[in-house]
View (cartoon, rainbow, N blue to C red):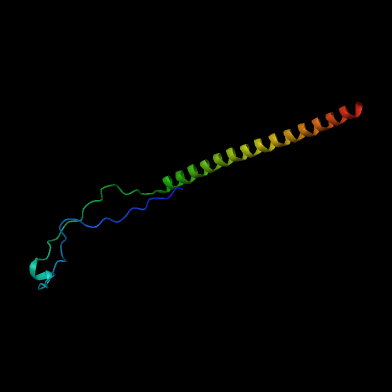
Length: 107
């Protein structure tokens, strides 16, 4: 029926090179080739370092606390909205069931 086509590995064409021969070379110590580096002054960092003072630390803690309280309030209010909706749907279902039950008894 449907058979996948498996690609075949093509045979190499053209010039085939042989492996290169590696010859040993003499190793000279690096200290003999290059003089020791001159003193280089330390470079200033590209961006300034952030320093936390007690005032900024207090502001960060206060801001983080405010964010947590706001997010917590929103989540709790959403949970309450879902719970109230569920309870109201359940009450409506009970009332409709009792109305249908009393309507069937009258017939």
